[in-house]
Image (cartoon, rainbow, N blue to C red; front, side, top):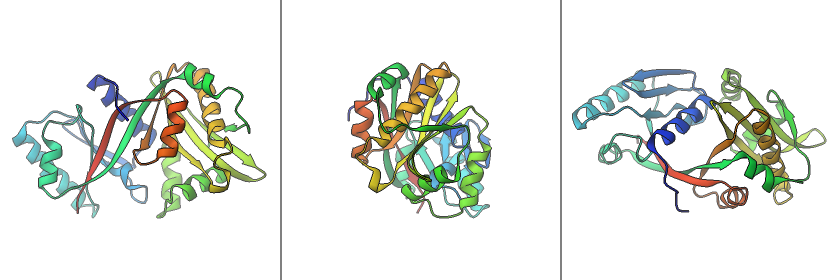
Length: 256
C-alpha cells in the first residue's frame, strides 16, 4: 500500500498520541527520546520513541544510555522507527548494532464523517461502554494472544486518563468483536480491534468501527487514526473500505 505525503510534525504528533493512548507505567525523557517501561504488557508499549534530533555522535551516546537504562531494569530494548521523525541514520545504526527489524506497521488516517458514511446501517449493532468490561477485555486478550500478566494489561487501561469509549458486539454474555477509541487534541485513535474467529465475516468488526466513529463525532473529532500490522490483509482491506489511507509505514528495531 502506497503512503500519501504527510508532514513529519503530524506523523510525530500521531505517534505521540498513540503512546498516550497506550500509557506506559513510566516514561523517562532523554532529550526528546521517550524511554517507556510497561512490565507485563505487550512489548511495543515499552518501546523507545526516538523523536528528538541527534547528530551521529550524540545518537551513539544516547543509544548507549538507552541500553544502560533498560539493562538496569532487566528489560530488552526496542526502538520505534518512523521515517521522517526519527534522527537520520538511526535505523542503519541500530541494524549495525545487531537490532533486528520487526513490522512493518501501517499508520492510517480518515475523516470521521467518511467512516460514519461507509459504516452506516452496520449490523449487528455494537454497544458502547465508558470503561472496559471483563468480556471486552478477555476478547481483546484472546484475539491478540496477549500472554503475560493480565493484571498489568488491565492496569494499562486503568492508567488512561484521556476521554475513551469501548465498543463491543455482544452475543449473550460474550463479546465477539471489540475495539476502543481515545480522543486527544482533535483526533480520535482506534485501538484493540479484535474479532473472535467464529464471528469474522459477519460484519461485527464493521459495527465496532461504526460505533467508535459515531462516538468520535460526538466528541467533536473530525479525524481518526489507527495502526495495523502490514501483514494483516483482512484488516487492511476493511480499513481501506472505511476510508482510511496510509500516511506512513513504520517498524521497530529490537535488540537480540
